[in-house]
Amino acid sequence: MTRIVGADRALVLAVAARVLQYPDEELAASLPVLDEAVAALPAAARALLARVVGHLGSRPLIELQAQYVATFDLRRRNALYLTYHLNGDTRRRGLAIWRFGELYRSRGCEPAAGELGDFLPAVLELAAGCDAADTGVVDAIAEHLPSVIALRRSLEEDGSPYADAVRAVELALPEPTRSALDAVDRLVAEGPPVESVGLDGYAMPGTEARP
Image (cartoon, rainbow, N blue to C red; front, side, top):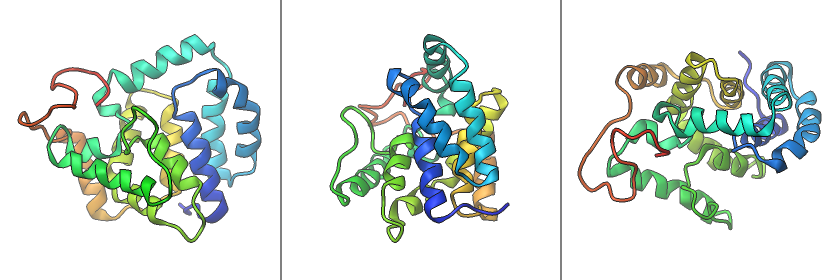
């Protein structure tokens, strides 16, 4: 399938960033603007993101909020943290998160207060706001493409409308290599790696809280 690049890529990432955030009053108020943005996208991404925006506009906010928590906060395999899928609760995840933090700092900003630097919606928003010549953030997301694909597959298994948003993100990233697809298969079969030593600051194994 044709990949999405340039200004269309930035718009796809911006819309996906917004719809993958926790639904709130601000999101509800922005739905008409999101509709307009989606209408300007290439057909493949337009169809995917239109379904997500349509879903968000068709349910009471309190229902959307409960659905979001059940989907992302209570299911580890649906974690929206890019480094979690490949690193799990291991010490090497700290370095991976730090690298994402450097992406923000090198562009004159910081991750939102209380949020880890690898939070997918925030990283997508950062990428969408970069100049076309600055591909560093998109490249960092692409390095975690197995995580993105594994997340989308998990959401599809759950029948979640959010799967379409993640699929749209995939279209805005490079075509996956064979090794990336093999990594997805391993993630799906084995899950993230686990380490029980030196994990202060991470969710405890066996819980279904946000990593």
